[in-house]
Image 1 (cartoon, rainbow, N blue to C red):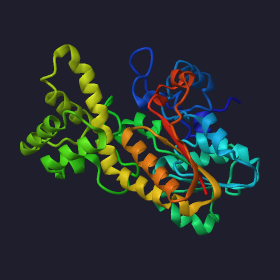
Image 2: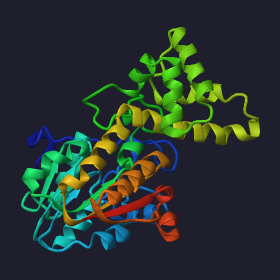
Image 3: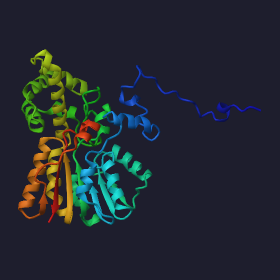
Length: 355
């Protein structure tokens, strides 16, 4: 007798995937193939080969250069201060060959748990990897548990998973809540910060954090809208405010000018909301305390403010005898890598070796 599947399993119902308009999905939530890389590996590789970054993924930058410098040996103890998608962590774990341990930190509770599970499936469990949801500014709290580190990596860039997801508010390309917090469960969002800042504070924030040349014009529009009872609480509204502020730019130049100002203003807000400069300063100050003798540290930066802080800290540490060697010049990704991963263009790597 033929059985009826729905009668015997009433809870099992086929759910059709919502259709999207056009040939290819444009919204982050509709890119089901990219969001399931294990099932659609061919699609992922095709996107990467074309120089794109699949939705929900992050392509690690300068992996070879980092591993060449860190010179990781089996049995050593290391730290990935910025876990992210876990690409760098995975490659460093491979170098340990099953002996040693890596601690990995990330303040984003959403992505760090996904990455922990992803690395566990790849064979890297708690015996060799410890993932902690914490800010690298607190790195000194790991000194006793770890016994110090033979190698440390800090990739200061924002992960593509955060940038691409409009719900996180890191991109002006899609409308979403203006949040920008690495940890969405703590602190004030970018929308809240813009609502409480004075005109002078806003101008200073845009200039100090991203060298925005139209800081005064943009701040004036946001404050004037606020006086009318309008909140700049979505990524689209911030972009609109920037477009209004730059209406004086010649029409043929305006689109590019708006794009660059959006990039700078979103960066400035992200730095402000997450206290990035303060956290980096604290991390750099504590580095010599947690590095073992001859321990190595490599740091990737993505804008001039970060690079200035790292360069200054390493130079001062060298003068004080804390580091035996430091990078005299920045190391940049190869032209081939920049073609394969457009988000690598602005990367700078600096390194230091503990005395």
